[in-house]
Length: 335
Ligand code: AHR
Image (cartoon, rainbow, N blue to C red):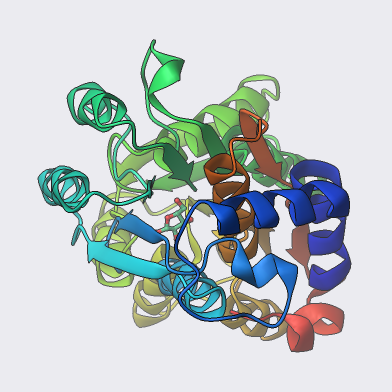
């Protein structure tokens, strides 16, 4: 269940109540605090300027992620500078430079792709502005360029998807098509890595095609249409997110096939709509990736601004949903 899962992560990874109260006090002494908040947790970041460079709005997951950050910032009285990269790294880099010029207290980035971040992260470091990586990691050898990473283990998500397939799909020559996320992004690279690891260890399975549909529903539909024309014998679709799977389902149905039966569908994210699709028999399995990072992200920001040590990596625990547990969990799904 989401609530108990969150509480577990909160207790395990982020703050002890004593530390939180202390950091709130310290940050309060350092300035800011235009309004008095009702609890110690809410005063620590009051009036602090925090920049957030988001990837864009490519999926339902992403919108839930944005909402989580924005609503938590508002709750804590943070002066949030939000920028959507609209799918382009150069927009995100420009946004980070603008945050630096505005003298924000801390920068959060959900990096669209893994590489190419060192120069702008060095600029933030020179300006003594701490950086928190949200959801996606960056590829750098200089780990002093960011304070911490907070998000899911995408390699493990790929493994969970692969293992579900091995445990549930019968046959000696199972043909898989893989729909990748944004090329060069951490989730596309890692979800492939974890999945391929499992496939390579099981000779019954073979990936016959692997292409990107950019985490987008419309692209998922287009890609599936062309894959169905090219291959008459697809057994499994592994999509790196639910949105692409939904687009693919439209194409599968338009081709006169039954998603979930003629083609087994496995995806990642576990948004509420995917639960409905599982209950309708059109998706077989979805691996969770929680977008609700706002509360943890601002707890971490508060600690950093109070001069406290934070974990270098804070990893969310993801669960697997299929026909055995989707109905029991759909009502509690918040996104
Ligand atoms: O980085 C997380 C991924 O990005 C989600 O799986 C996807 O839906 C999103 O766009």
